[in-house]
Length: 325
Image 1: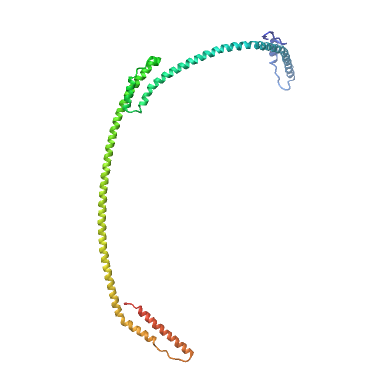
Image 2: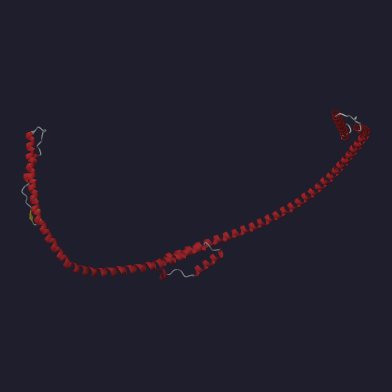
Protein backbone atom coordinates (compact mmCIF):
# COMPACT_ATOMS: atom_id res chain seq x y z
CA UNK A 1 0.00 0.00 0.00
CA UNK A 2 1.00 3.69 -0.38
CA UNK A 3 2.56 5.66 2.50
CA UNK A 4 0.47 8.44 4.10
CA UNK A 5 1.45 11.63 5.99
CA UNK A 6 2.54 10.62 9.47
CA UNK A 7 3.57 7.04 8.60
CA UNK A 8 2.81 3.94 6.57
CA UNK A 9 -0.82 2.73 6.37
CA UNK A 10 -0.95 -1.08 6.79
CA UNK A 11 -3.92 -3.41 6.14
CA UNK A 12 -4.20 -7.20 6.66
CA UNK A 13 -3.89 -7.91 2.96
CA UNK A 14 -1.11 -7.37 0.48
CA UNK A 15 -1.16 -6.52 -3.20
CA UNK A 16 0.40 -9.88 -3.86
CA UNK A 17 -2.45 -11.69 -2.08
CA UNK A 18 -5.02 -9.73 -4.09
CA UNK A 19 -3.17 -10.52 -7.30
CA UNK A 20 -3.20 -14.22 -6.36
CA UNK A 21 -7.00 -14.10 -5.80
CA UNK A 22 -7.44 -12.31 -9.11
CA UNK A 23 -5.50 -15.04 -10.97
CA UNK A 24 -7.31 -17.89 -9.18
CA UNK A 25 -10.88 -16.54 -8.97
CA UNK A 26 -11.49 -14.58 -12.17
CA UNK A 27 -11.27 -17.71 -14.35
CA UNK A 28 -13.98 -19.46 -12.22
CA UNK A 29 -17.27 -20.17 -14.11
CA UNK A 30 -20.63 -21.79 -13.27
CA UNK A 31 -21.82 -23.91 -16.16
CA UNK A 32 -25.49 -23.97 -15.14
CA UNK A 33 -27.74 -24.44 -12.11
CA UNK A 34 -26.81 -28.11 -11.98
CA UNK A 35 -23.07 -27.37 -11.66
CA UNK A 36 -22.83 -28.06 -7.90
CA UNK A 37 -19.03 -28.15 -7.75
CA UNK A 38 -18.74 -24.90 -9.72
CA UNK A 39 -21.38 -23.19 -7.55
CA UNK A 40 -19.61 -24.27 -4.31
CA UNK A 41 -16.22 -23.25 -5.61
CA UNK A 42 -17.46 -19.78 -6.70
CA UNK A 43 -19.29 -19.29 -3.36
CA UNK A 44 -16.23 -20.20 -1.29
CA UNK A 45 -14.05 -17.89 -3.37
CA UNK A 46 -16.58 -15.03 -3.06
CA UNK A 47 -16.85 -15.48 0.69
CA UNK A 48 -13.06 -15.32 1.00
CA UNK A 49 -12.96 -12.12 -1.04
CA UNK A 50 -15.79 -10.72 1.08
CA UNK A 51 -14.02 -11.56 4.33
CA UNK A 52 -10.92 -9.84 3.04
CA UNK A 53 -12.95 -6.76 2.05
CA UNK A 54 -14.73 -6.68 5.45
CA UNK A 55 -11.40 -6.95 7.25
CA UNK A 56 -9.99 -4.07 5.19
CA UNK A 57 -13.09 -1.96 5.94
CA UNK A 58 -12.78 -2.65 9.65
CA UNK A 59 -9.11 -1.72 9.62
CA UNK A 60 -9.91 1.45 7.60
CA UNK A 61 -12.33 2.65 10.25
CA UNK A 62 -9.79 1.96 13.01
CA UNK A 63 -7.08 3.91 11.20
CA UNK A 64 -9.43 6.78 10.27
CA UNK A 65 -10.71 7.14 13.82
CA UNK A 66 -7.25 8.18 15.00
CA UNK A 67 -6.77 10.35 11.93
CA UNK A 68 -10.09 12.22 12.48
CA UNK A 69 -9.20 12.98 16.08
CA UNK A 70 -5.82 14.25 15.02
CA UNK A 71 -7.38 16.35 12.28
CA UNK A 72 -9.74 18.03 14.73
CA UNK A 73 -6.81 18.88 17.01
CA UNK A 74 -4.87 20.28 14.04
CA UNK A 75 -7.86 22.42 12.95
CA UNK A 76 -8.48 23.73 16.49
CA UNK A 77 -4.86 24.82 16.92
CA UNK A 78 -4.83 26.46 13.49
CA UNK A 79 -8.08 28.32 14.33
CA UNK A 80 -6.56 29.56 17.60
CA UNK A 81 -3.46 30.82 15.79
CA UNK A 82 -5.61 32.42 13.06
CA UNK A 83 -7.55 34.27 15.75
CA UNK A 84 -4.31 35.74 17.12
CA UNK A 85 -2.98 36.66 13.66
CA UNK A 86 -6.20 38.12 12.15
CA UNK A 87 -6.24 41.50 14.06
CA UNK A 88 -2.59 42.06 13.19
CA UNK A 89 -3.12 41.20 9.52
CA UNK A 90 -6.36 43.25 9.29
CA UNK A 91 -4.58 46.27 10.74
CA UNK A 92 -1.71 45.97 8.31
CA UNK A 93 -4.08 45.37 5.40
CA UNK A 94 -6.17 48.45 6.32
CA UNK A 95 -3.00 50.55 6.44
CA UNK A 96 -1.95 49.30 3.02
CA UNK A 97 -5.47 49.85 1.58
CA UNK A 98 -5.38 53.49 2.75
CA UNK A 99 -2.30 54.00 0.62
CA UNK A 100 -3.88 52.11 -2.29
CA UNK A 101 -7.12 54.16 -2.08
CA UNK A 102 -5.23 57.44 -1.91
CA UNK A 103 -3.17 56.46 -4.95
CA UNK A 104 -6.38 55.50 -6.77
CA UNK A 105 -8.00 58.82 -5.76
CA UNK A 106 -5.01 60.79 -6.99
CA UNK A 107 -4.99 58.80 -10.21
CA UNK A 108 -8.75 59.26 -10.70
CA UNK A 109 -8.48 63.01 -9.98
CA UNK A 110 -5.63 63.30 -12.44
CA UNK A 111 -7.62 61.35 -15.05
CA UNK A 112 -10.71 63.51 -14.37
CA UNK A 113 -8.76 66.73 -14.81
CA UNK A 114 -7.11 65.38 -17.92
CA UNK A 115 -10.50 64.36 -19.30
CA UNK A 116 -11.94 67.80 -18.49
CA UNK A 117 -8.96 69.44 -20.19
CA UNK A 118 -9.29 67.25 -23.30
CA UNK A 119 -13.10 67.61 -23.33
CA UNK A 120 -12.77 71.39 -23.08
CA UNK A 121 -10.40 71.47 -26.04
CA UNK A 122 -12.68 69.08 -27.95
CA UNK A 123 -15.66 71.33 -27.27
CA UNK A 124 -13.72 74.31 -28.63
CA UNK A 125 -12.83 72.34 -31.77
CA UNK A 126 -16.46 71.16 -32.05
CA UNK A 127 -17.58 74.80 -31.69
CA UNK A 128 -15.39 75.70 -34.68
CA UNK A 129 -16.89 72.78 -36.64
CA UNK A 130 -20.39 73.71 -35.46
CA UNK A 131 -20.15 77.06 -37.22
CA UNK A 132 -20.70 75.36 -40.58
CA UNK A 133 -23.88 73.69 -39.30
CA UNK A 134 -25.32 77.02 -38.14
CA UNK A 135 -24.29 78.64 -41.41
CA UNK A 136 -26.62 76.35 -43.38
CA UNK A 137 -29.59 78.25 -41.91
CA UNK A 138 -28.11 81.70 -42.80
CA UNK A 139 -28.31 83.80 -45.91
CA UNK A 140 -25.26 84.86 -47.92
CA UNK A 141 -24.90 88.20 -46.07
CA UNK A 142 -24.89 86.51 -42.67
CA UNK A 143 -22.39 83.90 -43.91
CA UNK A 144 -20.10 86.68 -45.21
CA UNK A 145 -20.12 88.34 -41.76
CA UNK A 146 -19.45 84.96 -40.15
CA UNK A 147 -16.45 84.35 -42.44
CA UNK A 148 -15.10 87.81 -41.68
CA UNK A 149 -15.50 87.26 -37.94
CA UNK A 150 -13.80 83.85 -38.03
CA UNK A 151 -11.05 85.03 -40.37
CA UNK A 152 -10.10 87.98 -38.14
CA UNK A 153 -9.71 85.76 -35.10
CA UNK A 154 -6.22 84.56 -34.12
CA UNK A 155 -5.25 81.06 -35.17
CA UNK A 156 -5.55 78.35 -32.48
CA UNK A 157 -2.52 78.56 -30.13
CA UNK A 158 -0.69 75.82 -28.27
CA UNK A 159 -1.49 77.63 -25.04
CA UNK A 160 -5.22 77.10 -25.71
CA UNK A 161 -5.26 73.80 -27.61
CA UNK A 162 -1.98 72.10 -26.42
CA UNK A 163 -1.38 68.86 -28.32
CA UNK A 164 -4.59 69.43 -30.35
CA UNK A 165 -3.34 72.74 -31.79
CA UNK A 166 -2.60 71.35 -35.25
CA UNK A 167 -5.97 69.61 -35.38
CA UNK A 168 -7.72 72.84 -34.32
CA UNK A 169 -5.88 74.81 -37.02
CA UNK A 170 -6.84 72.23 -39.66
CA UNK A 171 -10.48 72.31 -38.51
CA UNK A 172 -10.47 76.13 -38.61
CA UNK A 173 -8.97 76.13 -42.10
CA UNK A 174 -11.45 73.54 -43.33
CA UNK A 175 -14.34 75.41 -41.72
CA UNK A 176 -13.30 78.63 -43.49
CA UNK A 177 -13.01 76.74 -46.78
CA UNK A 178 -16.41 75.10 -46.25
CA UNK A 179 -17.93 78.48 -45.35
CA UNK A 180 -16.51 79.94 -48.55
CA UNK A 181 -18.05 77.15 -50.63
CA UNK A 182 -21.32 77.51 -48.74
CA UNK A 183 -21.27 81.29 -49.32
CA UNK A 184 -20.84 80.78 -53.07
CA UNK A 185 -23.61 78.19 -53.09
CA UNK A 186 -25.92 80.49 -51.09
CA UNK A 187 -25.23 83.40 -53.45
CA UNK A 188 -26.03 81.20 -56.45
CA UNK A 189 -29.10 79.83 -54.70
CA UNK A 190 -30.35 83.31 -53.73
CA UNK A 191 -29.82 84.58 -57.27
CA UNK A 192 -31.71 81.61 -58.64
CA UNK A 193 -34.42 82.18 -56.04
CA UNK A 194 -34.65 85.86 -56.97
CA UNK A 195 -34.91 84.93 -60.65
CA UNK A 196 -37.55 82.37 -59.79
CA UNK A 197 -39.53 84.93 -57.78
CA UNK A 198 -39.30 87.45 -60.64
CA UNK A 199 -40.44 84.79 -63.11
CA UNK A 200 -43.27 83.77 -60.81
CA UNK A 201 -44.28 87.42 -60.42
CA UNK A 202 -44.20 87.88 -64.20
CA UNK A 203 -46.25 84.74 -64.73
CA UNK A 204 -48.64 85.81 -61.96
CA UNK A 205 -49.09 89.20 -63.64
CA UNK A 206 -49.75 87.49 -66.99
CA UNK A 207 -52.20 85.13 -65.29
CA UNK A 208 -54.10 88.02 -63.70
CA UNK A 209 -54.15 89.92 -66.98
CA UNK A 210 -55.40 86.84 -68.79
CA UNK A 211 -58.07 86.27 -66.14
CA UNK A 212 -59.12 89.95 -66.36
CA UNK A 213 -59.36 89.67 -70.16
CA UNK A 214 -61.33 86.44 -69.82
CA UNK A 215 -63.68 88.14 -67.34
CA UNK A 216 -64.11 91.11 -69.73
CA UNK A 217 -64.86 88.81 -72.66
CA UNK A 218 -67.17 86.75 -70.49
CA UNK A 219 -69.00 89.94 -69.45
CA UNK A 220 -69.34 91.00 -73.07
CA UNK A 221 -70.63 87.54 -74.02
CA UNK A 222 -73.06 87.71 -71.13
CA UNK A 223 -74.37 91.09 -72.25
CA UNK A 224 -74.66 89.88 -75.85
CA UNK A 225 -76.52 86.78 -74.66
CA UNK A 226 -78.82 88.94 -72.54
CA UNK A 227 -79.48 91.28 -75.50
CA UNK A 228 -80.11 88.33 -77.79
CA UNK A 229 -82.40 86.80 -75.17
CA UNK A 230 -84.23 90.13 -74.76
CA UNK A 231 -84.72 90.54 -78.53
CA UNK A 232 -85.81 86.91 -78.82
CA UNK A 233 -88.22 87.34 -75.91
CA UNK A 234 -89.68 90.50 -77.49
CA UNK A 235 -89.99 88.70 -80.84
CA UNK A 236 -91.70 85.72 -79.21
CA UNK A 237 -93.97 88.05 -77.20
CA UNK A 238 -94.94 89.97 -80.36
CA UNK A 239 -95.54 86.74 -82.25
CA UNK A 240 -97.59 85.34 -79.38
CA UNK A 241 -99.56 88.62 -79.21
CA UNK A 242 -100.35 88.44 -82.95
CA UNK A 243 -101.22 84.76 -82.73
CA UNK A 244 -103.40 85.47 -79.69
CA UNK A 245 -105.18 88.34 -81.46
CA UNK A 246 -105.69 86.21 -84.57
CA UNK A 247 -106.92 83.32 -82.45
CA UNK A 248 -109.25 85.56 -80.48
CA UNK A 249 -110.51 87.09 -83.73
CA UNK A 250 -111.15 83.64 -85.22
CA UNK A 251 -112.80 82.51 -82.03
CA UNK A 252 -115.03 85.62 -81.95
CA UNK A 253 -115.93 85.11 -85.62
CA UNK A 254 -116.63 81.43 -84.91
CA UNK A 255 -118.84 82.33 -81.93
CA UNK A 256 -120.69 84.93 -83.99
CA UNK A 257 -121.17 82.43 -86.80
CA UNK A 258 -122.47 79.78 -84.44
CA UNK A 259 -124.75 82.26 -82.68
CA UNK A 260 -126.15 83.35 -86.03
CA UNK A 261 -126.65 79.76 -87.12
CA UNK A 262 -128.28 78.96 -83.77
CA UNK A 263 -130.51 81.99 -84.02
CA UNK A 264 -131.46 81.04 -87.59
CA UNK A 265 -132.24 77.47 -86.59
CA UNK A 266 -134.21 78.62 -83.60
CA UNK A 267 -136.22 80.94 -85.86
CA UNK A 268 -136.78 78.00 -88.22
CA UNK A 269 -138.00 75.84 -85.32
CA UNK A 270 -140.30 78.45 -83.77
CA UNK A 271 -143.45 77.50 -85.79
CA UNK A 272 -143.06 73.82 -84.92
CA UNK A 273 -142.48 74.59 -81.26
CA UNK A 274 -145.53 76.86 -81.15
CA UNK A 275 -147.65 74.17 -82.77
CA UNK A 276 -146.44 71.53 -80.32
CA UNK A 277 -146.97 73.80 -77.33
CA UNK A 278 -150.52 74.56 -78.49
CA UNK A 279 -151.04 70.85 -78.97
CA UNK A 280 -149.90 70.25 -75.37
CA UNK A 281 -152.35 72.98 -74.23
CA UNK A 282 -155.20 71.28 -76.10
CA UNK A 283 -154.34 67.87 -74.60
CA UNK A 284 -154.27 69.35 -71.13
CA UNK A 285 -157.54 71.18 -71.83
CA UNK A 286 -159.49 68.04 -72.81
CA UNK A 287 -162.55 67.71 -70.61
CA UNK A 288 -163.02 64.23 -69.11
CA UNK A 289 -166.67 63.11 -68.84
CA UNK A 290 -168.50 63.27 -65.57
CA UNK A 291 -169.35 59.79 -64.35
CA UNK A 292 -171.25 58.44 -61.39
CA UNK A 293 -169.67 55.20 -60.33
CA UNK A 294 -166.59 55.12 -58.24
CA UNK A 295 -164.81 52.81 -60.71
CA UNK A 296 -165.58 55.17 -63.57
CA UNK A 297 -164.46 58.18 -61.48
CA UNK A 298 -161.15 56.37 -60.79
CA UNK A 299 -160.65 55.72 -64.50
CA UNK A 300 -161.59 59.32 -65.34
CA UNK A 301 -159.12 60.69 -62.75
CA UNK A 302 -156.28 58.47 -64.04
CA UNK A 303 -157.03 59.60 -67.60
CA UNK A 304 -156.78 63.27 -66.51
CA UNK A 305 -153.42 62.58 -64.83
CA UNK A 306 -152.08 60.87 -67.94
CA UNK A 307 -153.22 63.72 -70.17
CA UNK A 308 -151.50 66.29 -67.93
CA UNK A 309 -148.31 64.14 -67.90
CA UNK A 310 -148.37 63.86 -71.72
CA UNK A 311 -148.77 67.62 -72.01
CA UNK A 312 -145.80 68.22 -69.67
CA UNK A 313 -143.63 65.71 -71.57
CA UNK A 314 -144.44 67.51 -74.85
CA UNK A 315 -143.54 70.88 -73.34
CA UNK A 316 -140.32 69.45 -71.89
CA UNK A 317 -139.35 67.92 -75.23
CA UNK A 318 -140.13 71.19 -77.05
CA UNK A 319 -137.94 73.18 -74.61
CA UNK A 320 -135.12 70.73 -75.23
CA UNK A 321 -135.54 70.81 -78.93
CA UNK A 322 -132.42 71.90 -80.83
CA UNK A 323 -131.87 72.61 -84.48
CA UNK A 324 -131.01 69.47 -86.40
CA UNK A 325 -132.32 67.29 -83.49
